[in-house]
Length: 110
Image 1 (cartoon, one colour):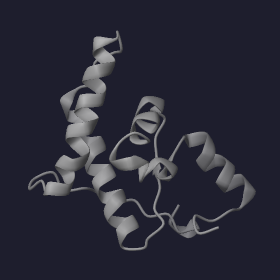
Image 2 (image 1 turned 90 degrees about the vertical axis):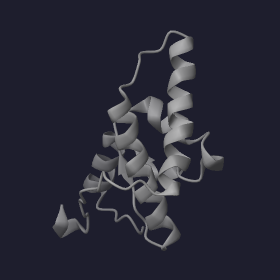
Image 3 (image 1 turned 45 degrees about the horizontal axis):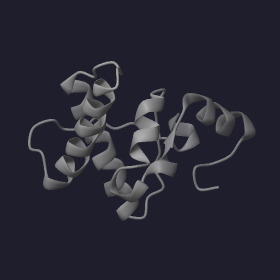
Image 4 (image 1 turned 45 degrees about the vertical axis):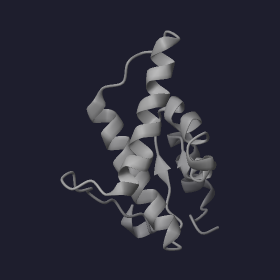
């Protein structure tokens, strides 16, 4: 993946900055509302992991870096469109979308 310009990064899990909570709290609320309507429960640790990833993705975008988050979780991709004015909605991709990029020879910049 590195040869294609794709970096993988481990996220810290200790100190949680304010921006982390700006993703975590709306995600948690979103999943709780879904549970009220019969949706499956999402473990807190998974919500935290998603919030860390969204925090980092948002930080990269603010730095002018075109980063993407690949996830098979359609509920997360749909939910992010309603959080923080949908600022990261276009940055979440399904695995199929990534494969399309790979096969078509596109770059993240293009």
